[in-house]
Length: 261
Ligand code: NAP
Image (cartoon, rainbow, N blue to C red; front, side):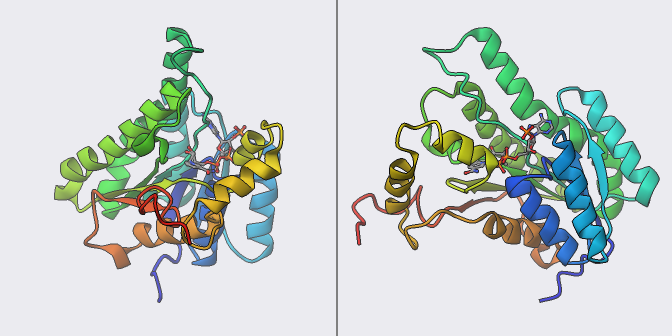
């Protein structure tokens, strides 16, 4: 299926590693122009080189997304380079364990600042360009918004708010034919996930236990599987899909707990 994404411009936050990297690569594969926006400098530069070596095009913007002005500048840099923006993937986030019993009000606020605010800021500044292009927005949320995790109030609150904003923006922006959808991953092996699983005493055993509870294939979801759905949602091939949450997790969150084949 041709997704008709050639030379279309998409900003991907946290686009240098993990799920974001896979989305960037999938966009480049489709002939689109990904803008890799995030703070991982070495990985961003490596990724830019890989895409350009393979004949693609992209833009690298190295920045921490903690201030609204960073998103404003990134949008301006993108428009200066390419003149238009066809979509935004809000993806950057860190499960930072700002919990209730072990947390503090200050850590909670900081976590929400880190995980939520730039989702709004980037869309706010990109909006005039998305109106022009009748563009698309994909918010990468998390299963923690649906299931809870324990010990991570700031992250879970941010991920829940991202799902609410997906519905809210889908309503507000439908008149411009801007579509807004969310992806809800659960267990995807990325640099961040690796760090988390390695924090367990017996990390390989913990990983095997998690995998054994995933109905479809008893395995983790791959970043590429998240990317494929994200890129489809960015394309006009999904022209009548908006306000939806796509839980891509091999049935982990929703299938019957009694299922144990
Ligand atoms: P990852 O491996 O840590 O990659 C995320 C990238 O985003 C990193 O380059 C990171 O930089 C960057 N980043 C994070 N916060 C940033 C900020 N404030 N400013 C600039 N760059 C920032 O993470 P991932 O596992 O791919 O996760 C991507 C998204 O999927 C996140 O929203 C996460 O909540 C969601 N998710 C992932 C899973 C999973 O199983 N992996 C499950 C549910 C939801 P640093 O490396 O410097 O932090």
